[in-house]
Image (tube, rainbow, N blue to C red; front, side):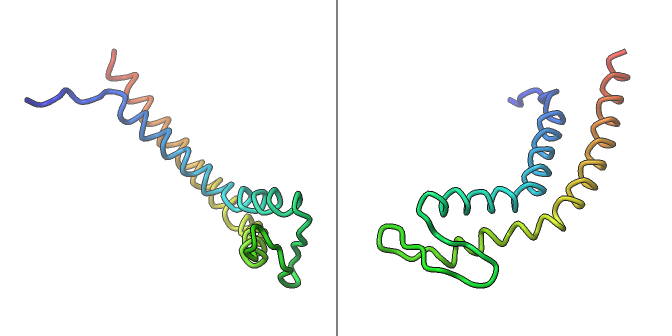
Length: 105
C-alpha cells in the first residue's frame, strides 16, 4: 500500500531551504557572538593579533575562541552569497506558488 503524496512537501522543502540559506549567511556572525558570549563573562581576551590563554575548567580554550571570533570575517563572503541565494529562492517560491494556485483553478 502506498501513501498519497503530501501536497505540502514543496512548501516544506522551500522553508527548509530558506532556513539553510539564512543559517549559511548568518553562521559566521553566530560563531563570533558565541565566542564573545563565552569569553566576556570569563574575562578572556580575544583579538586578531594572537591567542591569549582562556582556561575553562582546567582546559585552555584560547585558540578555539579566537578561531570562532575570527569567523566573523567570513561575513564578507557569506552575506552577499546569501542574498544571491535568497533572490533565487524568492524566484523559485514565486514559481511554485504560482503553479500551485493555477492548478487549483
